[in-house]
Amino acid sequence: MSTSYKILVVDDEPDLQMLMLQKFRSKVKNREYQFLFAENGQEALDTLSGHPDLSLVLSDINMPKMDGLTLLSQIQELNRSDIRTIMVSAYGDMENIRTAMNRGAYDFVTKPIDFKDLETTIEKTLREIQQLMNVRMMEEQLESLHYDLDMAARIQQKILHQEFPVFPDDSRFDIFANMMAAKHVGGDFYDFFKYDEDHLAFFIGDVAGKGMPAAIYMAVCRTMLKAIGSEVFDPAECIGKVNNMLIPESDISTFVTVFYGVLNVETGELHYCNGGHNLPYIQKPDGTVTELDDVGGLLLGKFENAPYEKNSIQLEPGDTLVTFTDGVTEAENDEGGFFDEERVETYLRKDPSKNLINQVKGLFLEVMKFAGAATQSDDITVLSVRYTNSQ
Picture (tube, rainbow, N blue to C red):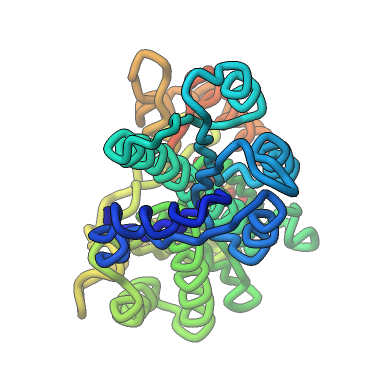
């Protein structure tokens, strides 16, 4: 055994201490066992209070001051569920043995002690203790993971816009976004801001990974995009700069996909760049739905000086740009089917006159109805922008 175990031997026989150290000398020499000794139950309790890491108590039943059965009851009252007790009793003393087992003894050996049998009993008991320690360690790790996931969810929700409308005094456009965090928090994010009086910048992204690392990386990505985007008008230039800045922050399994757009809310001209993200849809007032032209572009955080291209399209009044993360199209039902792009398009064709809030929330409802009771492994996020200026 690689772990060192503390074993408390409680017995009033003076020769037992020497016998134990002699019989288990190789274990003691290899620091696998560390023996402590007490002559009665009261001494044993005092020793236990000073050694919170003590694993095993080997106790005689018949002792002065406090016998083994009383000691056993006292140990149970300590709520030291990490301790296992082996009782030593005279051969044939079944009444005391039965009482000891009823009071929580893990096992027993009889006198005269057969040290081979005692060694086997100790090893079996220590295996049980080690299994208990392993379970507790896993429980602590799981608790820590749950804490990380809760903290990640708080970070994720805190930095995202939750209250709409954000620009109530500007009737030239409408914008709405929503995110539904998965059970295991990922790294979806979105944001938007006025570059100037007539230009709305917006982006949506998805960080690979789960939990706290993804949440922190997501916060870094969002901050960089907003900071660079406030200074750099061109979406491709902005994404290129952010990509290079993210590389030192990324490890082998960390990257992010981003769609970034700048809408002239006066004219309807949209400039955009895509960094490995799902292509958005353009929804027309008549229900026509088309996928935005792909300009290529690699995901961010992996390839230094990766090329990114800008494209431009003209939106007409009433046109809606619908961006989303792959949590929408990869939402899975109990049969293993995916919501996929075709279902997104079908939904968007149904009622193009819906106001933006109802449209986005309706898409979430469609995804949830499709998924049913199936647990989703990824965040579901939608950001929609509608150009409404009729000039």
